[in-house]
Length: 423
Image 1 (cartoon, rainbow, N blue to C red):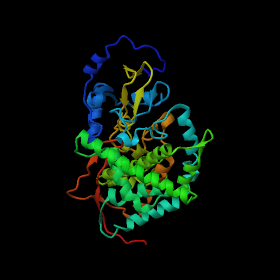
Image 2: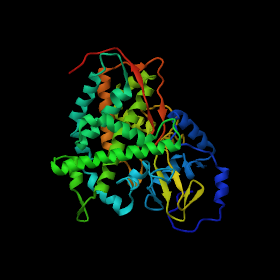
Image 3: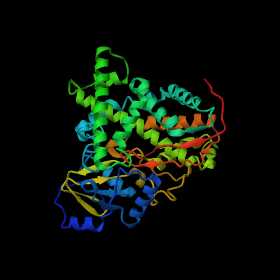
Image 4: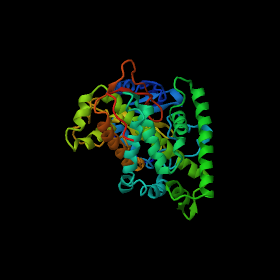
């Protein structure tokens, strides 16, 4: 059955009985490894692509491609995107009790913000950043190329994605490490901590990042600068500039998405390639393969995990009529590993038959930064290939993944033949 967009009464179904029948608890914020989690989600999907978890107040978990597509396509037509949290609370507690702009907006309000932001993230604008991004990649490689070993996450994936978004925003580059700490806490809570500790840490991080962003805005007002951040502060909706609260939400979303998503995709990619050098070589066997490789690794990694809340009397997900007010959690990585559309989904296949992946989401909330993300991935592959054509996972160091608001990997230790610095 497809998702219902009509606001009609709930069918004569004992939904509580359905919940009991399909009860499989799920912790979306655990320190569980991503591949272990995907294997467990695949086992759920094989039994039923829509199950129910009683954790965090209760939510539905969709694991099939069709079921997740049916939810994402119906934003503002039976679902809303606030709060983007299966537990039904904002990720940083009181510090972000308002909706993150534009990811947690819907309808006309969301379209207004998208219309303002999309030109900034257009392909032509992103291509203009290419020389700076290539220089950044090589500057980072220079810091460890002579050592023959590196924690790829802290030595490349994070500072590369973080500094790229900071370049775009025009923020101080020396603040990257501090931002990473905030992002980790807001997105993932406290790894191995209980729910109470995670919420306290997220509220503290939210307060600190709010103070930082508001002080940055005050500085810009005192000394205007011609850049992306200033442009956001100058835009108007319905004849009025954005309030400080709305600007804060917009900057916070861009920081969270920009620092975390590409970092996660690169970390997962090189954790895989560290044991599959044949796929690293195949990526560069033909000029056209690298673009296919970017898409295949985006499908394979897919860090985002959106949640939607039903606003109609009910919406049908798979064969379940989910009532008003209940939430549906949609791990995009699970959709991208659905064997119905991706044969041997846990394998990397650069020649995979065309099927749109969901790494950037779908529908009105499809990721606005997709062109930048693709460019970052391609440049990283090309510059790393030129500098470390051979590498492998360092013996004794197994990459450690985690879940959260964006799935990621804590560290990926690589070893390789040392090379010369370029700078």
